[in-house]
Image (cartoon, rainbow, N blue to C red; front, side):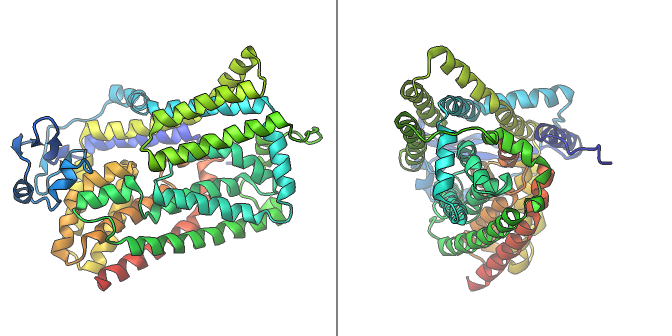
Length: 498
């Protein structure tokens, strides 16, 4: 039995893709009619069984049972087609066979090319920085600075990641932080799980306690027809409570591992991971030179500019990728890296993150199978029927589990919001609760699943630090249980305070 090893992240995703393809043969295909606003004709366009064009008026929305202000469409807050409640209908079965199964990851790579390019260019820049030895000298200096106060690193990084996840949706961008922070945590006497936790758990609890996250809170509130400020107090309380619990959990584990490294869940990989991220023992690490200090300043500035651009200038992956590409060139010049050495270092760095890039594409391929097999709306319709006639306390908790299940198939927070809110939000009126509770249920349910959802960012993050999914689950499951109970408590209290 010891010879049996847990499969790689890529294989896990292929297994999930195969199960999704199988589901397209079992579940009936179906879809809701959808409504979108046309900038060109200034009209609503309905697709599906009753396709046509309709006046862009509040009356049209009321006729379709869509309780969303007209300005949300005209102003561009809702730019994706939304489902029209009560219009679900079965369609011609579209089972995904072997051809579609093998094409799905390739289509997923095509659909995710902006994220993949971002990851590869980031890897290239990191390779160039490594060629200047600035990382090694910088980590050594920081380790000396934090001597005896290493726990502050955990608190600072986790809180910053949580703030980013809650406010501007920091998620995929966290990939950029692993090569910088993992060596720092290792040098401080922790294991890679601690580094991974501070970055991934930090950003994920931020998403679960979203306050102004445009990709979940804002879009979901718009799609539910409410102001995003409704329900923000509950989400803020969840953010603070959840972050404190996560900090306690990480610090408790970190203290245990620092005192006795053999208690690490990845102790058998200790030498392998340290060899990948740290200089070999006995290697002489020189003090930072002026050029290396400038290299690190440029490197850090790229992240500061990226965060500012995403949060304030509506940047997306093209702009972020450009920043890191320019940063790589500047670092090569300041670090006096020759042309041939620069190209070799850049290509080598990109190659180091190629595995991560492929994981992102394969995960997107699973969504492609769902969309082409037309079973997303079938699952949504089933979930709606399951919870529609329940008392409000049971309703909100059952909907919480429905969202957790749907998250496995629809990992995109914005996609989930636009797809489900027009269907689930009207149920709040029937049950007698505020629509903000539907928004919060969606945020908590999808946020919790992000911790272990193979179709989200966790497998790419684990690959960055060479940790297996099974070991991550072993580490994280008690925290997930605690946060699940906390979320259900907040939801139950919330519906009865309404």
